[in-house]
Length: 416
Image (cartoon, rainbow, N blue to C red; front, side, top):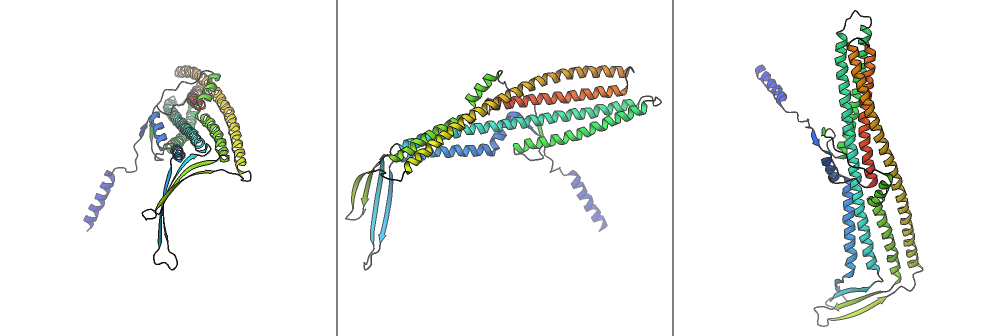
């Protein structure tokens, strides 16, 4: 019995060791175009905008259907008191509108303008999702670069500590050099842990945007930048011409103008042709046609109020359009200035990195030739590490500012 139990436990242990790690998720390699395509495919905002566009398209068909005649069939069965059999009646009615004061035409034109505005909103939504994806992608790349720098700092300080410990222990500054280097290493390790956690948070934001598993590891790749406007005037003109949300605002104003015509049509007479066939399939069946003209003689000012309301709606859309133009102009101006500032900072940090690299190489040579002490070398390395971190931050800030500028001007492509 003990032998069987031992053999069974050994078998279970061997099975557990040899079983694959079912909780492990292989890293997913994603380029920026693939990320954008994935975000656009899974975005709820894009799906909602697409449904709005489909609904607006059906509204056009619904309004155009008013031009066509309507045909209805009615069956009646009546039981009269003291009558042995019920009486039956079948009626076929066809109604053809001849004139409705331009209401149908105005509704069709209004729905077409509204559909074009909703389509512009769909494109604007796609651009917003694209921009958010690019920014999240750049944030993830930036976090990965900062983590690599922090890991390299720990590695370099670990090697330097080993070299310091190999020096002559009888020197007066040996203990102080070891303690100082160990302190620097501990600080670098803490910095790496903090940056590693920040990278996990930033990566989770990208996976959430792409609707991937929260623990999904990503392998990202560097991408070439897109061209941006070179002058502020060109950027503003481009924004006022290409921004899809501004196009939608212009369409909304046109929709409001057609709304005035729709309201005014209520004052005009309606004319339609009516054909009725009664008592079908009975000996006494008959039919007749009627041309009907109806107009509103008194409605307590209801039609005039509707026209006034439509006019106020048109004035409101005009104010909204002007507000939109001012807002887009300001957004573009700010995005352009931030982009120029990021470009300047990136060039300055690159120059400072070159100078810090030269100083550190000099400090290493002097340290090996005992012309400088360990403290100066550590300070030089700290300056170099800070320069590298600033250069990475400036580089990706430049890329993100360019994305914001392209979004502000409406130049951001949604397909790559």
